[in-house]
Amino acid sequence: MSDDQAPPDRHPFRDDEVFAELKRVIGDSDPVPPEVVAAAIASRTWRRVDAELAELVYDSLVDAELVRSSRGGRRITFEGPELTVELEVGPVSIEGQLVPPQPGRVEVRHPDGSLTVAADALGHFRVDEVLHGPVSLRCQPDQGEVPTVTSWIII
Amino acid sequence: MLDDGIRELVRAVVEDRPGAWESLVKQFAGLIWSTARGLGLDATDAADVSQITWLRLAEHIDDIRDPSRIGGWLATTARNESLTLLRSAQRQIPVDPAWDVPDAPSGSGVEAGLLASERDDQVRRAFDGLPLRCQALLRVLMADPAPSYAEVSAILDIPVGSIGPKRSRCLHRLRSKSGIWDQPESSMANRRGET
Image 1: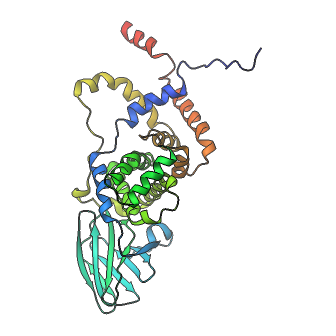
Image 2 (image 1 turned 60 degrees about the vertical axis):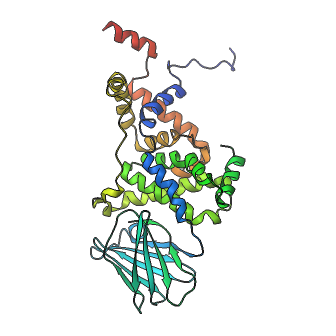
Image 3 (image 1 turned 90 degrees about the horizontal axis):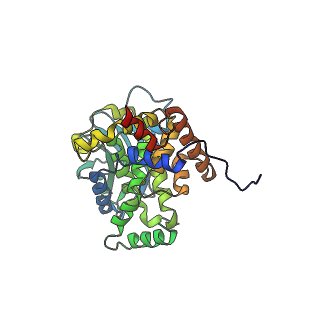
């Protein structure tokens, strides 16, 4: 008896053949939709240029599932070298706060458009429209030179 | 694609050479899509995950330290975003139609669909009956172009060395539970002819 003889396969189909059929039926019937590829290609235009990045450091959806209160919306904090941006995302509006508190302009950016609101002297701003999908804020303090953009997040 | 090719491609993207970003999308769009779908997201959420993954890359492309591992970076990002979405109760709010993406695309033709459908349905049912971890693994391995084991490891958070054995066990389970692959395809065809 020799060891280098492969044991007879009990199955008439090898793994690779089963996988190939699976791929044909499951994988190939669910290709990446062309709109998704187009959106991926278009994302290049959002490359960060001349702006500080405020990274996501807190998301109540992820970090506080157990203690989330029934009141109030999802709380999100972005932290950058110059600016911290705090958000509370409700069903119909977003309340925002720039820290340190200061006036400025906040551009709410979605992949297919944006709107701009003002932050008051205490750094508070409010967005009366919540579009679900990816969003990023570009914050330009009145006194600052370099704007801060937040990391993209899905709301 | 070999590491050198990926490195060169990422360099081209950083330098903003024409067509480079598009090539990178073509290389990894399938992997990101399969990741989200494999983790159980519907087409709409998978579209959001795909888009945010590329937006994240756009904001981080100048910080990528090891270009050869960009696939793992994209895969990890897509995985984390998928898991966040799965937790999100707020996603029950109907999405804006503008973000909507149609579900699985329709087949090339009704007749061809009918001919192939019997066995395909069996295969689909068998796949749906697998444990979710098996479905996720096999779905990610189906990505086109095929992912590296390092990328699969990043997505599913399992050691590279366990991927082959897990794949084998999942396929074995699929085979033994469904019975679809118990006989060679030719004899199945013959039997079908007799009945």
